[in-house]
Each structure stands twice: as C-alpha cells, then as structure tokens.
Length: 528
Image (cartoon, rainbow, N blue to C red; front, side, top):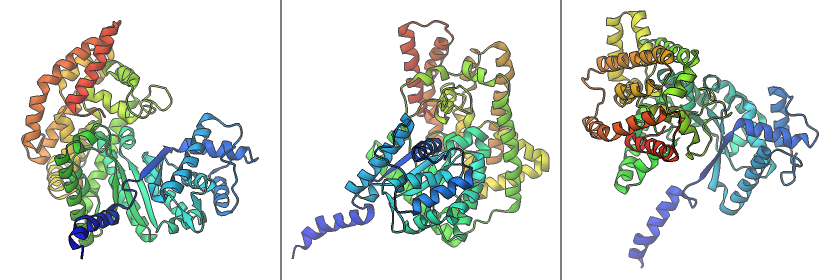
C-alpha cells in the first residue's frame, strides 16, 4: 500500500539504474601504440622471446597463441629490469584489473589505442589485459579494445585492420564475448593536421561509410567513437549538426564522442545550457536513426562524390605543399606564439611527441592553439579554396557552382563542412594576423603571408557564393557576439605581438605575455 513512496522514490531509482547502470559513468583508458609495443617487447624479452624483431604476421601469431593459452606468459608483478615506460604500462594494467575486481567490469570498459596502424597494435592490448586476468577467453573479456584511426594510412587501411582482427581466433572470440560490438575511434585532430580541413573531412566521411559497410557484412555492430576537439579544425562545431551530418550507414543507434577542454565548461557548467545541449544531442540521434532506418544506405549522387574526389586531393596537395615548404616551420615559429604555448603548463600531454619542433611531431592542440592566438585560423580553412577551384577548373565555373550549390542545399555533410569553414573564416582577422606576420623575417613574411591571405580571401568569396548568403555566419547572434568581443581581444593581440617582438623580456613582461595568451583564449573561447 505504499504506492506514493514507490512512485516517488523506488521507480525513479529503478529507471536510473536501467538507464545508467550502477557505475553511472565508466572510464576509458588510452595510450600510444608504441608504448604497448615497447612494453610487450621488453616484458617477453625476459622470457627469452625476441618480439621486437618479429614481422607483423609473427607478432600476430605469437600474441594470439599467448592469449588463447591458459597460463600467463609474463609476470606482471615482477617483470624484471624494464624501462620506465614499460613499468608504467604494466602498472596500469594491474590497476585496471584491481579496479574491475572492486567496482565491476563496467567501471573501466574501453581501452583506446592512439595511432593504430596494424592489427598487432590491437592484439597487444588484448594480450596485456589477458596477462592480468581482465581477459580470460573463451568465457570473459572485460574490455572493448578500440583502435584509434587518425592518419590517412590508418583510415584507408581500416578494412584491412578490422578484417584481420575479425578473422583472428583470439580477437574473434573476445568480440563474441563482448556481444559482437566493435568500437572504432576516429581521430579528427591529427587527420586534419596531416591533410588539411577539406581533405580530412572527406577522408573521415568516406572511411566511416566503408567501415560501416564492412562491419555490416561481417555481422558486427559498429560503434563509432568520434574524437572531436573544441575547434573547427579538430572536429568541433555545433554537435546537433555534426551528428545529423554523419553518413546514414554509420548511425547504428550507438555513438560516442569526446568533449574537451573549454568546451566542457562552455556547454555543461550552466545547468540550463547543459540540458539544452543534451536535448540537441538526443534530438540529432533520434532523427538520424529514423533517417537511417528509412534509408540505410545514404543516396549520394555520383556527381557529388566526383566533386569531392576532385576537391579533396587538390586541397590535400596544397596544404601539404605549404607545410613542406622550405622555411615554413621557421615562419610558424616566428609569426605565432608557439614558443610560449610550448612552455605553458596546460593539457595532459607535451606539445611535441618527440621534442622536435616539426609540424609532423607537433601535437594538434598547440598547432591549432598557436594559429588561433594570431587570429589567423589557418587549420580551419586553409586549402579549402584551392580544392574548390580545382573542381571549378575541371568542370567549368558555371556547371561547378551549380553542383556545389545543390550539394550545399541537399547534402548535410557538405553543408556542415562549408558552414564550419565559414565559421573559422569569420573568426579570422587579417589585420591582426598581419601584426604577427611582421614578426617574421622579411623574406619569410613575403613568401608566406600573402599566400595565406590569398587563400583566406578566396575562401570567403567561395563560401558566400556557394551558400548564397551575404555573410559568412548563418547565425546573426554569433556575428553580433564576435563584434562585441573583438574590441576586448584586439588590444591583447597587439600587446602580445609587441611582447613577442622583444628579444629580451623582463620577468614582468614574461608574465604579461602568458596572461595575453590566457586572455585571447578566453576571448576566442577556444585554445585548440
């Protein structure tokens, strides 16, 4: 007879448990594949196995046999004389096992592998999890082992990597225990830094479709994990539109994505804004799932695909030509505050993977952060114009523009891509950027800055022409927001450029310089 108590207290609790489980929020683990390879190689070396000199086929065979046998291969508690990296990796897997024992397997149920390039990189994590008892085949697998595909070669090789894993006896058994759900993480940041905005977006779109089709033929449920950052060039932008722009083939009802850095505070610090953000995500997922059920394979006209297949390679070539140009790294160092950004106690990882200042080794966040500080949001639009112009040259301007306008009106992927580029273009301020360009050697400035501004101006012209708008931004309130913001941020930029141009700075000037970085980031509402 306690209906009121049941309805007020018991039923809501049951609904919450049904929805979220008892863990509420599970954790993911993530590390670079090289650290796993080093850990496996060092750990098995103490057992007389020379893993490091094995080729890919031999590595897969060794790891498969090790996972399938009952007895462990290595003593994780006492691995012998190993490097600090290996000790850290092994300690992490021990802690994982302890955590799952205490809180349940759902507490930490995903392990992402950065820079995955080969199937063995996935099997190495399965092997290490097996050695601590998190995996015990054929009955138990406590982890989704998730390849993070972020380079062009990895994205294009996704079918090869997944196909080899699905055919592997150990991995296929683990996948079956996990309910035949394969999670794949897509890296937006590094793919953009490697290929440029337009080419990276097209690579991600096409490869998502191919991965989804392949998983369907293999009778495996795909869960895409979108590694989005806050900035446009790292997959940012309105979440609702991003989810609606995903290919129908990939909308399985399961999706994951990252929210990073200041985006968390912007979207979730205020309860009302957080509620609105979650409503928009749910709205997008429900609508996208409905659309995918009605049309499982998205009908993309061949001429649209042909247009992208012309634009993307041309844009990639232009972008890579810039990055590989003699003197560009020097120009980047002189005309942006990267030297300050590198020294900031900010983020969870060092600015560069190897300690070298090259575009290849520099992480995506400081790359984007540095350009954002100069108000030249190059990672969000550079080579877009070159790619579009290559298509217009190939088919003729009149016919090409007609097709591009049709694509913009009818294809969510292309509309979102162009609108996001428009947002990055709108946030670019050439006059402010010129102040930073003046910091570079005259020869470097004359070689690079006019080229960058030319690409910017042509990009603005093309976005307006294709979208049919008279301003870059679709949202009037955002235009007003930028107009209100700029008078406060512009002086900080001028102060920062002035301080960067000084060969010797006092302690007070160094502190002021760092404060300008914080102030500009707050005003831009974006670090990278």
